[in-house]
Image 1 (cartoon, rainbow, N blue to C red):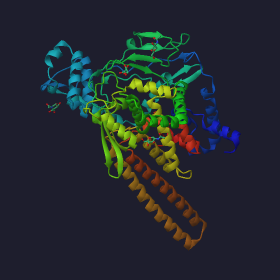
Image 2 (image 1 turned 180 degrees about the vertical axis):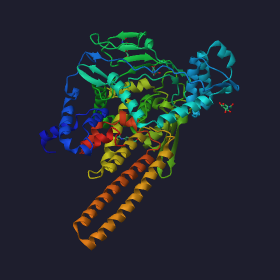
Image 3 (image 1 turned 90 degrees about the vertical axis):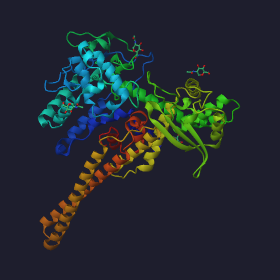
Image 4 (image 1 turned 180 degrees about the horizontal axis):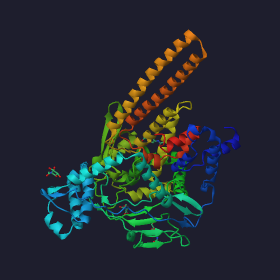
Length: 600
Ligand SMILES: *[C@@H]1O[C@H](CO)[C@@H](O)[C@H](O)[C@H]1NC(C)=O
Ligand SMILES: *[C@@H]1O[C@H](CO)[C@@H](O)[C@H](O)[C@H]1NC(C)=O
Ligand SMILES: *[C@@H]1O[C@H](CO)[C@@H](O)[C@H](O)[C@H]1NC(C)=O
Ligand SMILES: CC(=O)N[C@H]1CO[C@H](CO)[C@@H](O)[C@@H]1O
């Protein structure tokens, strides 16, 4: 607004954080607690220096030969700790009789026992898959004795683990501190790598321990044994001239390779789906940031041409060719409903999930009139990860008429778009704009929605708790758009109750303090001395402080209630251009603190 130069300077200061998680780095410069006020000046300077030393990769040239790094050195993964056999007093019964299990069979049994209270272990599919894999770990004697999972009694194991987790909660401060320190040590040793002269944080450097596979929804492989990953399963990727990570004593890696066209550090193949798993860098890293950055840049390009695309698909609704019409209606759905293009199933997933192109006749219902609205389409199907998508939406008349046409003479299980498939649609998108996919529409719409919501909901002079609430509301609007639902967490009621108790206590404290303030005022009126005047001030401040605390708690409660069935994380991580937060709100630091979740 104040001339080009000022604008550019403003943008430069606003845009140094290209990816959501880069925001979290700002935690480093969070001012220290008040007690260290005197040192704050010095700390501030130091913190500033730290941010200056951050790698501003977005200002550097990108390599054009497809290589992702020149130098990469790391310590390899942290493997899951070895199995610790159960103490002798924890028993397993089969058919009412005590049975001592061999270590391998016992280990797998404990995975089941740990989940005994969970609904999963009652599901037929889960039990069947578990039992089948469990038997593979049994000795032949065990196999001949244990023939029916329903005769297995895991109660003592389950009780034992419950007691252990209880004991962990009851640990002394010192013990907790020790664990914390150990974790910190591991983080320092394994949590960072050196990539092209910069120390970068690694994402998931711990390899998941063995256990039973759950999968989302009613996954047909639920209950199967997720095997322990050994060094012999692991491929290390690092540069030739780096210090290679050492496998644990007496073991060896499957392979050490030096492939700088890929970004992973460690990989292995998991046994359930046969998919390849990777250890990659943390989202704050250059590699991840670049990807994020590009994603949002693509979304911005879409913004520039979306009007043209919309005009074109509207024109195509009238096409003489059926395939063009179908394509245009599908595109409209993707644009307006943020649907996914196809059925992006994981390998092995047999759940009946669909995306836009694979919608069937049975998944939609048409209502020429519904309540006050005309041309309403009702969607009801299982989307990705078997999450139900349900929505009723009025559409334009032409879309409605087209849908009627597509439905003619079809059975419920027929494809709605019989002249369309995912590859055709993706190819078409690619022709419309370089790099365009259905996901770009999601990203674009999510970012736009966030911006609009932030604009509507926040005002610069709100208190911080109010801003957090507004921000989360905006984030929720996006999550709803993207259909990121979740079941209300099990602990929800309990945590709400706890919060309510805190609110009640705060309320009482407020009443009491107000009363004290009143008393102090009366006393001051009578005596008019300095001491009583000071007292009034002290109490006034106290009331103010408690009011703020109360408001904060109430905001939290509202937030939590509204958030009951919505998963914010996915959209926050994947669909929201962090730069929109910065633009939407002048006070950058506040927003950043909110964004990295610390203020939630
Ligand atoms: C399982 O074992 C526990 C003791 O370890 C016992 O109290 C319980 O009755 C057993 N359950 C069944 C179904 O036999
Ligand atoms: C985003 O999605 C919403 C909800 O489906 C839709 O109403 C809106 O038109 C879309 N906005 C943009 C800018 O694409
Ligand atoms: C999609 O349809 C085209 C044209 O009908 C066909 O050539 C192609 O094999 C189909 N792709 C898939 C994945 O079904
Ligand atoms: C040389 C080599 O094996 N490269 C592999 C590195 O990992 C990627 C997956 O990220 C494979 O596609 C490459 O084949």
